[in-house]
Amino acid sequence: MEQKKVREHKIIDSHPIIGSILFVLIMYIPVNLVVGVLNVPLSMVLPGYPQSGPVGIIAGFLLGVFIYRRWFRPDAESLIKGGNMKPMGRFILMFVVYWIVSEAAGVFLDGTKLGLPSFAYVCTAITAGFIEELLFRGLFIAPMLRKNLDKKRIMTALLISAAVFGLVHGSNILAGAPVDSSIMQVGSSFALGIVFGAVFLCTGNLLMPALLHTLHDIIAFSNIGATTEQGVIAQGVTLGSWIDLAACTVFAICVILYLKKESVMGDVLRLWKGKWHAA
Image 1 (tube, rainbow, N blue to C red):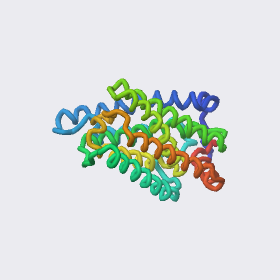
Image 2 (cartoon, helix red, strand yellow; image 1 turned 30 degrees about the vertical axis):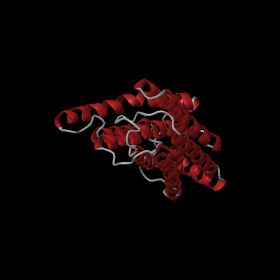
Image 3 (cartoon, rainbow, N blue to C red; image 1 turned 135 degrees about the vertical axis):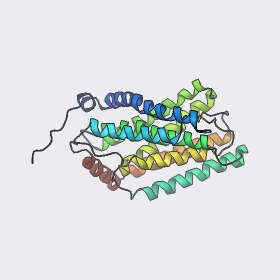
Image 4 (cartoon, rainbow, N blue to C red; image 1 turned 120 degrees about the vertical axis):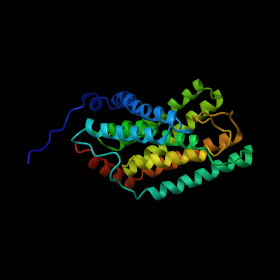
């Protein structure tokens, strides 16, 4: 049986950071095009259906996963199949502790009122969870691990993707978010980017960080009046905000220390060598 030839990807292989950023920018266009093409007509015919509705979001997510698989065929495994689910218990436990600390700070220090988020808020959470994880974890981190896979490459991919993820959230200033809150969100998004990236690296399955990210945002949107339906922060920095940032930072540090354990890093390297036949 003839073995399939591994395709060359010169930019990503020789300049992985630049190549991954370019790949994300290229993929942003078809993914968001599909989201709009499906969701805009549905929002016009279905009362209460938002333009960030789940039909277009899931279709855009699956399109991105499909194009990634085809782009890097035949040496790349799927972003949403298989993987190692054993670390998820540890990540979920850490998430629960973080959520309790963050929500308690908002309620008891800032007087935040909690309530069930509307369907529009839930759709915004799904958008962030699936589209942002596709772009900043799946399509950013995975290509960087294609060649020369080692501990340094793992940590570089994690930190660079988290930094870009954090900086992108600074653009909320242009959407009307308070400047101080937007700057703080850059820091908290960088920390959470480390967490979501570590979940992706350890499990090898993009659905895991996407679901956790979605759940995180749904809980965040339960804070009445804290954000708009588009997910933009609507209030200035509070004491609870500082506690949340501190909790995010501690969470990220714990995740990095966990990832750098020899046994964990060994599992991650073996997992991604299997997901990249050319690694």
